[in-house]
Structures are given as structure tokens and as C-alpha cells.
Image 1 (cartoon, rainbow, N blue to C red):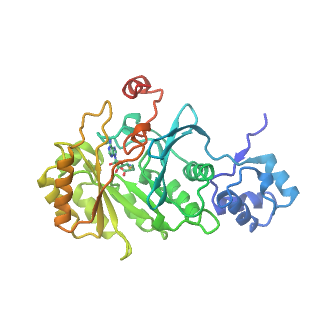
Image 2: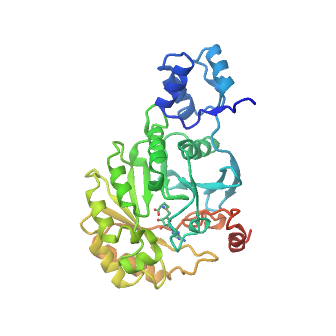
Image 3: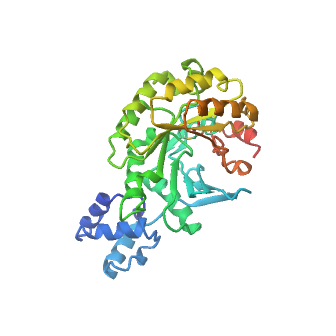
Length: 356
Ligand code: SAH
């Protein structure tokens, strides 16, 4: 039986060098292939016109270029688009294209499903299926920017399905490609990695030389509430998380983002606002208040506008920079916490919830 062709898409510069050495070629050609893959985003080996015809033919015999395949697109009335990618074995992952005031932002997934089990998030209902490879992470951005003809720099947020810091190795390989001059050439400042609060891996990411922006999903101001809604808090509590944030080597000009999903009657009281101020006031940060996106099967409610405004005013009064983030793409299930696709294991149960 013929051995299946290997996928070049997602390989690092070093891995491409190994491919070339195995072909008896000079390793410097790896840079050429790297630029074709990640800067020019070609999907045919034949398109790599600065490689000899002979090398192209040999590569074609053993390799393909296969970024993830789009299974569906859902266009929102607000201009955002939810892309559903095929993840094999009947699984799917989602990414969201969002035209914002300051340009294009893409929200990418890092895992199929999620193991975090946050009680307010639909992705949690899928359970954890697997980590995405570097090519599957980078490919979401490549496919969308090609299709949407995004020209020039854009912003990336790792806020789709999954916990990026639980797929740290592949996340870092993807960040290498996003930030490499011969790759996407994005400034690390344009990339935000969001975590539910994995202190150990947050510290490891802090050692990465091209540190992206960091967002932390805080979502509660007491361990009692956070334990309840985010089980990761049982491992690293609020104090440990905040201390880790203080130690991150963030540049003087930059800020950490704290995400705070407002859940009616759970974490939206004036006392919560006061505690939040105390927790973050010694950190250069901004708070993103995200009014909970209500969904079938999740027993929380979005606070009324007055409560949201009161919460925000309390932060304002204490000089805590903040914004209220109304999620995009709600009408197509693309908003924060809505990314979930029915799967076989818990499929029936979930399909019922999702009405599909
Ligand atoms: N696992 C990472 C990356 C996912 S980011 C993390 O936890 O940060 C997804 C963001 O959406 C998180 O800040 C989360 O708190 C928020 N979110 C999840 N469910 C939501 C919902 N139903 N409504 C509003 N925001 C939600």
C-alpha cells in the first residue's frame, strides 16, 4: 500500500529544513517554502516557482499542502462570519471573522472541544476531544484571510474553542508562524491569548520571547463563586492567578485584559465590583465586561442594562479602564461562549440543546 502523503502545512522552519535535507537539498530552501506556505499562502507545490521543477516534482510525490477545510460559513447580520472547519472523525472547530472599528479581528480555536467545564460556556458541553495541531490553528487564519481578501495586518484572539494554554506546545508553534517575518509577520501586540487561568503554563508562556497580549477570564471575585463556575479555580485560586498576572513580563506600554462575564445574580453586585477593583487595581490592566450570552441549556441570565451600567460605573469611579463587550455574531452562534458543534458522544443531548 502506498504511504499517504505528508502535510507540509503547519511545519516549522526547522521541520521544513529536515524535509529538504531528507531530499538531499540545501536547508536554506526551507525559508523559501516557509514563505510560500505562510506569507503567500499557496496551496499547490507547483506554485512555488523559485524551486526547481525537479524539486517540486519530488516534493509533490511525498507531500501535500492541506490547511483545514471549511465545512460551513454562517454570515451574521453584523458582518461577522462564523467559519466551521472540518476536524476529521466527524468533528468540527469554529473560528469567527469580525470586522471591527479598528480593522479585522479573527477569533481562533485551539482545541476541539474543551476540558475546562466552565458552567456558562457552551463549548464545555462538548467535553474535550483533542488538541489542534499548529497547522490547524494557523490554517484557520490563513483560510479566512485568503477568502476575505484581508490585506495587511489584522488582529488575532485565541478565544474560540478550547483552552490555549493546555495546548501550549502547538500554540507556541502557531505563534512562531504568526509572528515570523517570513510567515504572517504579525506583531505579537496584535495577538491575544486568552486563558481560564492555568498559572503554570501562563508562567511558561511568559518566557516566550514574542509574548502576545494576555487575557485572563476572571469572571468572579470570590473563590466560592469562581470554584462554582470555573473548576480550574480549584487548582489555581484567584490569589494565585492574580499573583501570576503581576509577575508576567508585560511591557510598560501594554496591559493585561481581564474578561468578566456578567451573570445575573452571580457576580454582578456592587460588592463584586468593589472586590474586582481591589483585585486588579495594582495591575496595569483593562477589564472587558462581557454581558452573558444567553443560551438554551445554560441556566444563567444576562443582567439588565442598569446593572451592567452600575457595574461599569463602579470600575470607572476607581479608575479601572474597562469596556463593555457586546459579542458579535450572536444570530449565527458565533458569540463568546456559543462555539459548540454537536458530536457523537454527547451528541443527542447536545443536539437537543442546540436545536439542530
Ligand atoms: N479557554 C480560554 C479561551 C476561551 S475565551 C478562556 O477561558 O479564556 C472565551 C471567552 O468567552 C472567555 O472569556 C469566557 O469567559 C467567555 N464566555 C464563555 N461563555 C460565555 C457566554 N455564554 N457569554 C459571554 N461570554 C462567555
